[in-house]
Length: 56
Image 1 (spheres, rainbow, N blue to C red):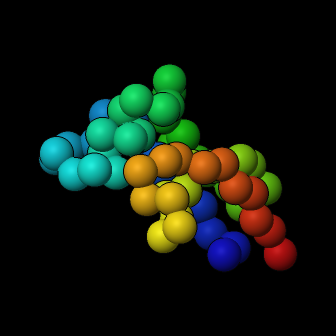
Image 2 (tube, rainbow, N blue to C red):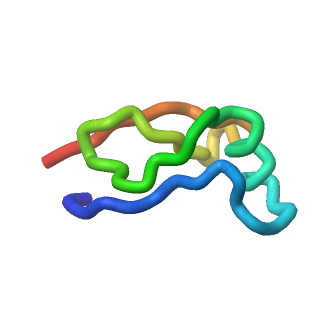
């Protein structure tokens, strides 16, 4: 991934991921970069937010 995206914990909707983000994140990341630790929901632990970083 070489692009940027936004992670907003006050996401609309009642999805499981939206609830996890609201509980885990204190502030939004409006310009999330590949080198930062960012929230990820994995298949192996779908009820938990894990922080990952990736890059080129």
